[in-house]
Amino acid sequence: MENKPLISVVQNFICTIPERLEVIERNVPKLGEIWGDYEFFINYNHEENFEEVNTIYEKNIPKLNFYNNLEKDWASVTLALVNKVTTPYVLFCCEDLELFLTKNEWGNIISESFVESDVDYILLQHIDKYNTQICANGCLSNPEDQASKIIISNWGRYPSPGYDEGENVWFYSGKYAPHKRISTDAVYKTEFFKELLTEFLEKGEDCTHDIPWRKKNIANFYEGYYDFGNGMARFPDLKCAIPKNNIAKQWNEVKQNRIWYK
Image (cartoon, rainbow, N blue to C red):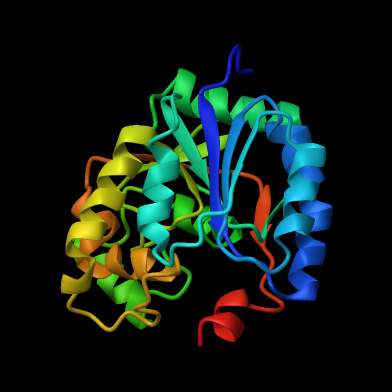
């Protein structure tokens, strides 16, 4: 278990759709239950539903810093939030990441990953896709698809050495990550996340592949930049972990990006 907070939580989002507001209403109490010892740095990047979202967070998050910076530059605003963080790790998650675990289970994951193993990055997105025994064995569920072929070419071998097994998490290096992208939903070493955001702000527009959402006001641009050869393969020695259990899942029934930012 954690003896003291090692982590701060950062979010930067909008919510203009009723169904997604319902997700926040039911999920934020869970965030408070599990991460209530952490300091939260939240920016709500819209005027619509600001009071409603602010009230939900104030009711459930004890150590809350809540902002309403309307600048339409996701990375710039997020970096400003991360620069306020004083803990060695920062947990960034989108507002639609729902949690399915207890505070004690979360504490065990963090203790094993950071206190005992000095991990750089814990993946929180698509956990059920990458915490399988197939990936643990160094294989991919469909090695013939385009994304898998890119990953395998970076490995230089197939299968990879696979994961090292912990009690609560699987461990792997950046070189042998079964995912090519650095996902936003993750726990990062704070300085590493700052470096990623800073580089993206300086060089993001130079990305050579076709990013699905090349828009400064959404996180997808950041994820598109840190993908393909500029993703996990670029950081071969990155110490990574993924929970063995499916502790979180993104709610994707109604997508905010495709409605608001289209």
